Length: 214
Image 1 (spheres, rainbow, N blue to C red):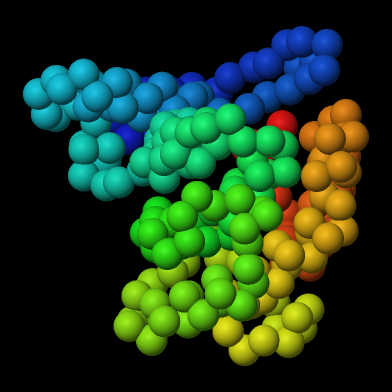
Image 2 (tube, rainbow, N blue to C red):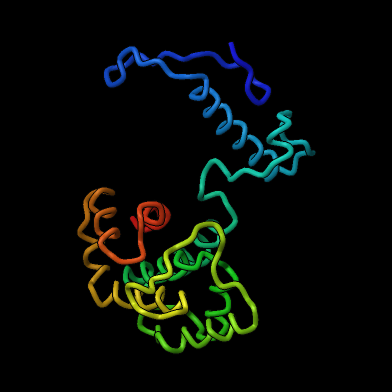
């Protein structure tokens, strides 16, 4: 028996048709303990129960992401205010998702909405969007989230400013017929391969994008 982050764990044995007799380390047990305990913390918090929401010292002391990505603040904003806010068509819904996730920052989205009104693909103007983001950067306003980092895109589109390349990619994806292409995929593997075919999008960022697009 081993004790890790306040919980005794032991070596697990998985016996099923796919992993017959496979031995796992205590980390396997620990992983599911952590996921379960982190979710309990989430429920205790939203139910306004008194702190501490867990008896585990490490989980009390340090910050960890939610067990489910959709539970976090930014994802909740995306779901409520961008995807399901109104009855947007497929083109506008996909455009709004990608635009938001390229920057993944609520304040950037609000700045665009305040300047241009309701955001749709038909009303998107590359230079106007770039000019507004230029202005925000000049004011020392952060326009990208630090949650994950997309490539700068200089090699693909040649602009020194990353946001201009991000918007250039967005513009190219729609001129390339991405809406029609996404509508034809029948599996996550096909969607993965489709998104990976575009510049500036790598393996990790695909996992961030496609969970909201099917």
